[in-house]
Length: 348
Image (cartoon, rainbow, N blue to C red; front, side, top):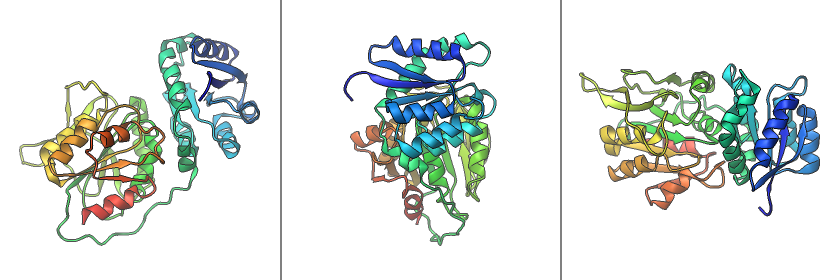
């Protein structure tokens, strides 16, 4: 990309457009090239101006954020970052926007519009990341997700006892693509750590639970791991697994802090699984920025487990998968389209 990152800001509040534009224009490497008052204007200006990133509110009257995401991405492949207070109370439309191809989201402070300046650094970081993201992820997200309703013939002796998955930016849709391909008779538990705001996670779990015949639950301390269950880490603690008094693996939480990421830490979860399940572990790293999960994947491979990373072509951000690939601790690199089926094939 040559020159500054060109940003289109869409928000129905004139004050918000002014504040957000000021935040963007204060950066040396980006500029607001125009603003829009609703989703219809956002579509028209995105197509005409071809910005590098669209920064989009969700609640904008008749022509809302969903309208904008759907109609922008029908015509041009531009990364869209959702910046909305809607996520504080109802994340379903935001998850819908991500599934349609939006890049990522940020919760906008709802009590006081001026407080959006408190998250200025996060806004700038998301815009910058979106501008340099892999645009192919837009087509990945837009393609249909079909649920696997069939059982699978597993051998009596499985190769692995647990699957653990870590992801960040682009992860919600990637995770949905993985678990919808898992069979109804999956004979092992699945553990997931997805970087996500705390208030988003319960709705995310509920949404996932409607996409699969498997049972998707929020991880709770003391829950014994059961085959066919998918346990999602809460967004306010670092989930691990530990052994209870009956010598069974159960969900637990650790106060340990990790420099890569916390709440939830992919490393915390993966390191604990590697410690307890060892070579009977399948570790999976999906799309995301940074290095979280790399230490965990290294340990899983060291213990003799099997490690899988999402490929560059279908990752929204090829950061976490690249880190594990660079450390040479990946057994297989797999497209997100094939990930669910590949995991099943590894089990027996």
